Image 1: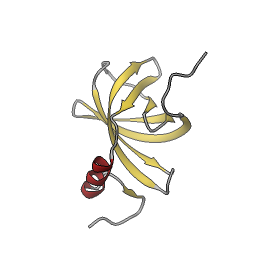
Image 2: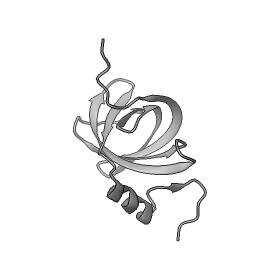
Image 3: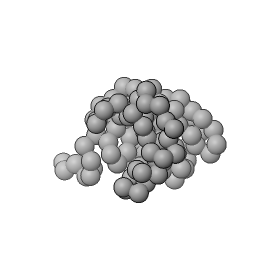
Image 4: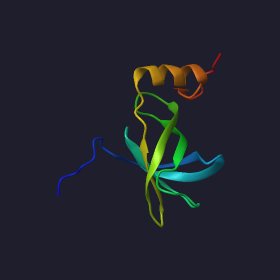
Length: 108
């Protein structure tokens, strides 16, 4: 069977906070890629809900990331999220508002 994913998913086991409909939830990222994630969690969610996820990425150093996406899958274990594309202008905007920074870095 051919894998239809655009991005390689990497196994994770890290705590995460995320917001859906102005409510903050906690969970654990089970796997993560540039295009999405699966979060083990409990809550009442719907396919198509917008979600903002705050997590740490060590891909290019210890970064804290804030990504927005859409819930594309719901299971007994949790939710699958497809991230919106993060282009260069989005990346710069995230840096400016403090949404992406090196872990422990002081922002001015």
